Image 1 (tube, helix red, strand yellow):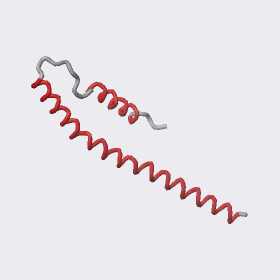
Image 2 (cartoon, one colour; image 1 turned 30 degrees about the vertical axis):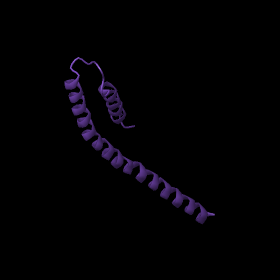
Image 3 (tube, helix red, strand yellow; image 1 turned 120 degrees about the vertical axis):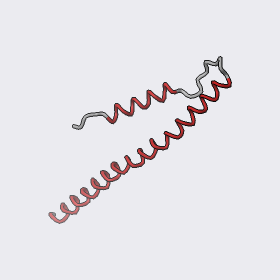
Image 4 (cartoon, one colour; image 1 turned 180 degrees about the vertical axis):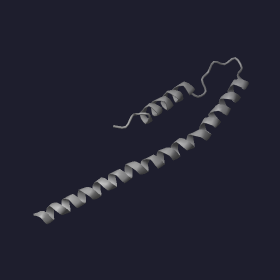
Length: 84
């Protein structure tokens, strides 16, 4: 019985380790995704500038910078949570 219990504990330890490793590695993917947004933001800005130069009387929203800002604020709130 003790041997069986040891194997269960050993497997549980491996499961926890695999889970934690996967959760930590997810941050690398998130960093890459966020870094890939910078060129897209620059492109959106240039596109917006071009549109307004071609349409100087326009009130059109080319890219919703307000919505993007709200999402960034939400991300900051998630990441600023205090540790338990």
